[in-house]
Image 1 (cartoon, rainbow, N blue to C red):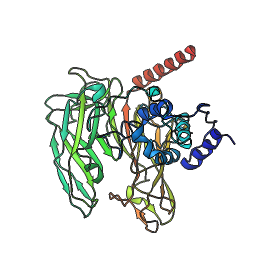
Image 2 (tube, rainbow, N blue to C red; image 1 turned 45 degrees about the vertical axis):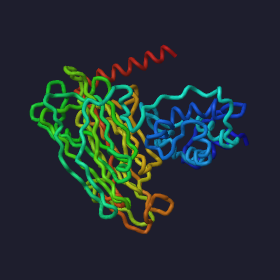
Image 3 (cartoon, rainbow, N blue to C red; image 1 turned 180 degrees about the vertical axis):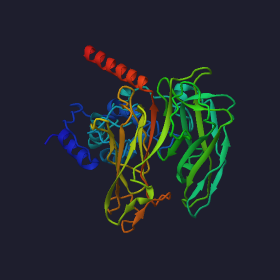
Image 4 (cartoon, one colour; image 1 turned 90 degrees about the vertical axis):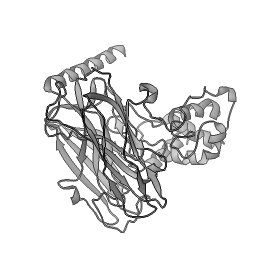
Length: 445
């Protein structure tokens, strides 16, 4: 059996992937760090694994990478790193924030380790990437510093005790309408990430007199502004799309802390990037929390040593564009899918996360040309699986009966999804524009 074929089988069995094609052989010559592996690490690893960033070790340069070769082999083979848990065999596969490795990149790294992790010729090294020092905002490189940073009051979590839900209110200081084009949110300290289960920023403001062209939707909770959970990155709006902040608005925080055996003090920071003054985007984006438990979420019931399945259905009252898919579950979370049932009965599987990891609440943001455009009357169907068996290595106790709850040891199942709702004429125009783009791609091919 060829090395490439062996790697294909190992990856598929370890990560639960269903390959439909052969993994290509990387190169006939020896794979070296300098020529083959360093460019992959620059693209996929260094953003987190460098001095001052969130990764537990730096992976910049051969001397820092080589001691971790065996560990790198394990996490790449299992699909743990880079953290990207979407099923690559079904649904939409083009994402604007895709940080996964390609099949070829995976094979390259595994071959490098198998061949003894050689350095190679240092002259083959790519130019080093320039990273900002310290814990910087992700969008600062492309958008500049945030226009506004709102910080919650500091909270001190004791060494032990019950989980805490901290809900202070902070004034935004906004004195005129401003449209938001990007948002980031994070604990203010690295140690704060250890105790923060989630942080939700709810925007409290007067929605009684909506601005023209905002496409405000009756029945949509305009207050959900931004959510952070372990491992999540920021959100950048698409062109001509934004979120609206009004004068005298406030941020109502919903922050969940849990004890980790050490007294830790932290706050939550919300970075906001505005459109220039006077720019009013055509569409207003709304963040939705879509429950995956039929009826009341408290109906969630997970017996000991079982795998359970639940579904939730939500009807879109107006046409719109689905911007992202972000599953949220706890330690027994196994998988979650999002489907669209069109008014004519057609079912489209949009995305399926088949390897949910509580420590990485990935937000899968669709690329512009594939973000689902759905008509009014579409039903969004979410399906969640929980694994309360000993096979789930994150399971605290497979003998416990688990139900819905906010604590980390409890369970829940919902999806955070941003939707840009549209008037029917805007939806038809978007469909036509998408079709023209596809026709042009066909002609170019």
